[in-house]
Length: 550
Image (tube, rainbow, N blue to C red; front, side, top):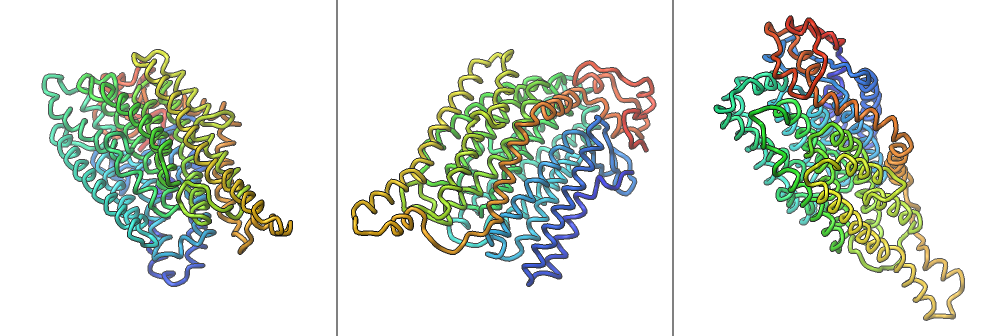
């Protein structure tokens, strides 16, 4: 077995308790070990991405217990891409936390941060629905502590709301898994795909209930309307590095929807017909609209960015809910873009709040106003989907994939209309925070003509302690990710297209995971994602497409 596959889970699981037990009172050493762990995670994620790039599916059987009875981790193009995205985001966020001193405002930040990474990466790699629940709980328990890091009444209230909503989701998750297990006798995703495909339609009522409950759980995690109410207050009041890392957490819910409802409850599975598309697409479009309206009406910069994240999530789920390979490819491209853009905006919002508070209003000019305004402008146009950055390309891909949909007119109208409203909301905020602030400064200097020229310059650019450079490095790194996603849009879209094709033709995934099961993969499971060339020896349980056969 390829032991590198389990390394991105084991590494933070070892570093976190080491920081707690050994480095609790040494913040500098905590920072060194946490950043070193992040860098090593990126190296591991890159190696895994290279291994998965040719479409190979790899399986890691913990304790050498074979699926579907043992716990398995599965590496394919999708999981490799999401793990790499998580590690890159984590490094930028960690740099900002260290540079802005956020990590020193409370206890155990870096240990909780590592546990959070363990949960997120585990959720992307697991091949078992129950262990998806386990990793969800790991990342949620860590996020509870991170939410209230640094203290404060508003942060504590938002944290309580966040905990309550996610505990409800976790309870529903267990009920959904219990229902599905009672029908199929398994929770291994590949085994579920085989068994669900063979269920008779007339006996499918209970499995359909379980599938709907599971979709509701993932909708809560992804902040889909009307289950999105926890996100604005929670993200707006969370510490900035935590909110930026949370940009990947909504993608965990979107990933789970894409994985489960192409592999197990695919669009061609008879018992799953009408479960998802009938209501997921309208809900996603409403999420986009509500998020855009929230951006336009926000009076506080944290809420502004939170509603921008809701708009991005709605756009992503709009693409996923079409359940076609073209739309899924567009969704994957947009998922990478929206993660970097939302994280950058949360960090920029923290820079503004640290200098002049969170209210969106004309105030005295903040330090480094010119640089921060330029960063805000770049992140805002990326989030709104304006050219030339990757947000424009991502939305263009989604609109192109929607041309043959029954609700194509609504999809085009909502996405384009929300983009216009979002542009107006960010333009209003930027005008008040940066342009009118300069106007106030110049107006004040005009009232006192006896002030010397040096005093005028001082009003325009307040002098104070020199700002640390590391937070700006982190934001520039995230924006560089958006630029790279734009420059290399061709290779990236080819990768996402190949990933989407594999999702909708999951025979290689199923055959590799169940390679040692003493029964053939059924024809229904092989064809649930579409037509493909089945290997001649599939009935013997071999996996010729996999480097890891057991």
